[in-house]
Image (cartoon, rainbow, N blue to C red; front, side, top):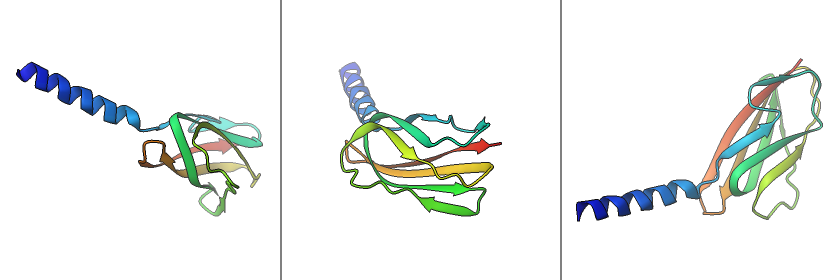
Length: 113
């Protein structure tokens, strides 16, 4: 009986853990160094998400909010335009809502030589 209860609890726990949609990959990759400014950044999530806010900070000084337009659908991949603010480190901070209703957020960075 204990085994059945334990198996049920593990099943419920793993279902809940898999319901979230964390960031899977970015282009440029997190903490990478690139030789020229990319025209866009790509965000690839493990599940569907709707972005609600994205800001880009350059060298801890200039911060720009990315215009998400009429983005109202849930998807896994996003291509966001970049504004060239020169060489240095760029930090991309994002917020969103997972298809399962959970609020998500995170950051990643890259450096332009």
